[in-house]
Image (cartoon, rainbow, N blue to C red; front, side):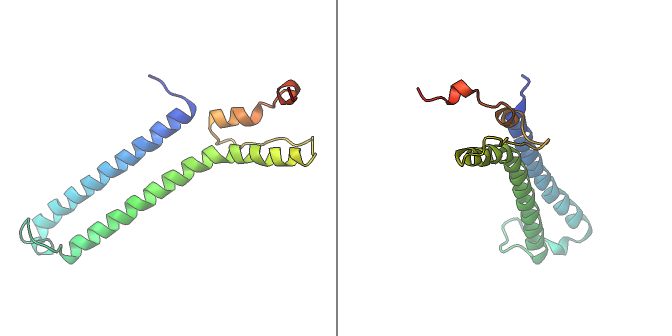
Amino acid sequence: MRTTGLSRQLALSLSGMVLGVMLLHVGFYLFYTIVTRFNPALVSPTVDSWPPTPSEWALIATLTVLGLFLAVHTALRLSRRILQPLNSVAESARQLARGDLSVRARSEDRSLGEAVGLVETPPSPTSCAPR
């Protein structure tokens, strides 16, 4: 099953997010493996002890901030690629409504295929005519 355009971009972005979550889990595993081998005093003495030690809180905070950063970065990048051509079409429609008949919508090279198709396909005069 080969996907293109927006479907492909969404699949790649979500796959990247899943990979990031998996790497966070591996990070926790590596932390506990290394710390329990070289300095066991940095981690909780038993599995059920609460609250976590300061080093565990530092790990939790660091990986949480890293995960949030990656999630926000991925979401902003994807939304920018989807919304830029649509915003261009909306602005062109506003200018057209004000009477500027020479206006054209523009898209960036990094925009998604379906959105670029919307921008680059001008409406035919008959499709805008009142019925």
